[in-house]
Image (cartoon, rainbow, N blue to C red; front, side, top):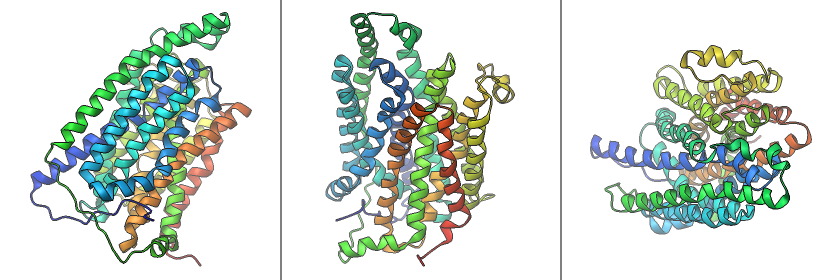
Length: 444
């Protein structure tokens, strides 16, 4: 059985306009992926109120979403072998549109299981695209500049992450104080359920619009001039040989580092609203935008600096170190003082946030270069096993399902702030992989 979608053969560049056109189409898809992904950061505290959940239960949102990348990676590979990349992308958009439509009955019934099913369906469609577009970007040019190209795509992805919380907050979180835990606790059960149902109804129109937009883009991509890339099917690469990817220690260790990275990226982006809400930050619904702005800045640094001034390995080393520093800042900083935010954002007129919240947002800067740097380092030297190696890295996205859920359990047992210590060993692993792990080529 295939472990991943097959790696596309590198195609000759017919013209600069063809390459630019392809990059713009893929950039649009990255924007869509980012839009849907980073909506979770605002959705977690929203559904916590609507469905009356604790932190652990609310973070099943991230589990249902990110576990799809592991569960559906192999089926997605099989689908893409039959449809090709372009048709696979349109099918992925169609599945995402169906997932968005599922939010309508979920909102009307306020059944949490339906929300989770809708999220899983959305992520299933996204998996279909992710298994194709990441290797596609890597193969567009020299491997030593792959991180720079992925960084450009990251600007589309994280740019959507900046916009989404602002849109969600304006549409969904108006007069949210009426629905706070304290306000709802004073109501009779029937009145409390009615208030939650009224809040849930706010999801119907936006998700109906999202479904319509996804189906429209599906049609646009289907009839576009996006160049199809032939699949590399190696008839001699049987199932036993495909398992040979596990002999490449730089790949397996890279997958572990990627597992840790996706986990901490999701924790930083999707729990900052929960944490801000606990601290009484008035604009908690848009705090994910703070993290995403920091990630966009990190991607811009990558686009400019890699590989001219900064190698992929050194970028990853700096990211791991910064992650360690900011994690300590979150766990030990002041939840009342806002000096860091005032120093960094005072000139913008943006309302300052507590230091611990700002350190959590700054993790976006630390995280930006991890994904672009790990991919080329982990796939280096795999040859015909590159396709299977790519799938292993895609499946490592399951870190976004497991680690936030573990964080939710810890936060209910201790506190939201203390639970952030969970990220420290994750960044230590990323730092070690950059310093040494990526250079290990064989198990001893």
